[in-house]
Length: 148
Image (cartoon, helix red, strand yellow):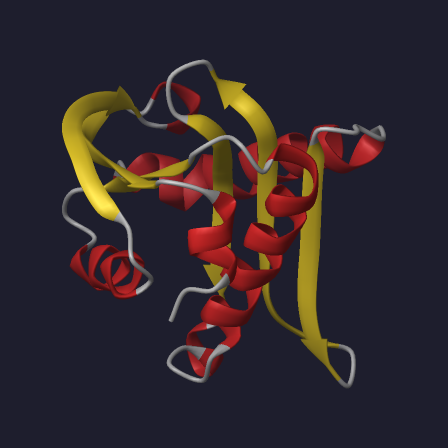
């Protein structure tokens, strides 16, 4: 889904820059949670409250380590994000972007009660062209907090 040269040479540098920036300063509109077990990272989520006037709060990243997929980690992280959003941004909707080709993720979000609100071409990270992305939405953080 991403350019081979980006994945081969640029992805680590790009992700380090992004996450150093995200974690380098406290933000009241940001929620980051890492799921771990005995100091092993199972997955993480990053959320921004009130990111879009129309769609509300953005789930910007959800990642679960391959070895821990289908074990409830993603659902746990999404519910925790929903609970945080419900506490601080309870009247807003919730949305995220997922590449159209990422069928497993799309099924996961649909299982959690989201709907696909449309597909647009979005730029890939670090000048990596573009790809069709789906905007998945929940009507409220409460719907997400109780999902699954």
